[in-house]
Length: 240
Image 1 (cartoon, rainbow, N blue to C red):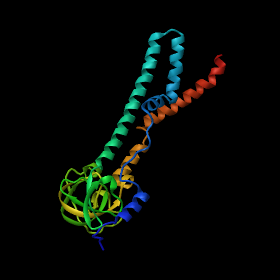
Image 2: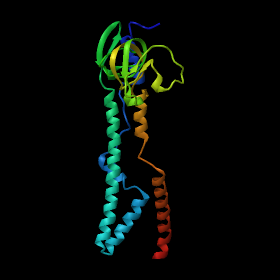
Image 3: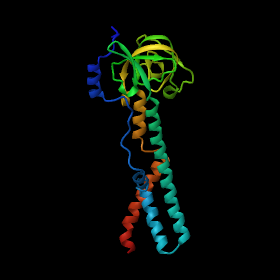
Image 4: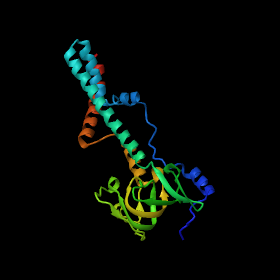
């Protein structure tokens, strides 16, 4: 039976201690200087650095400039890509930050969405941004735009009928997901996931865990550069 009075303040307090606030958070980021220096931590860069130093000692200024320029460009490109990933995570976090209307202790209240906890009775209306993953229990001509999650270009008509557990995300008509937008109608639902436990939060975590674009070519280059570095180190005593 649907709890029409919503959660009590005591229940909210206990659940906030257990689940925390409804905020998408990434890993603690390194400072920009450290992130930039980390771009030089690659076997191929070590080889280029040694080659650059040797050419400088030989006073071959043009070759030395080219080698050092390649190193710098590589580091700048890597730094920019990582910065874009961090900005994308920040944008995802912002997409679920809004004000939310809920029922607590039998009263309708409007609070910052970070105050939501699992089990909250949430009210949705046209124009609202969905602040958490919600199991819909009562809908009235509800349509939700989920393009950010599913790629669907048109709003999805929502319902309340139970669905099989294996139903794919795009077909879960009885759910509204964090970061999506109510384009028409009204609804009432129970919050089932907040923060990083939402579908949007999982995307954020996947982006956070991805350290960079890796392709078969880049893997081969990395393997080759490591092998070349070992060969150079192995031959160095013989060159003395």
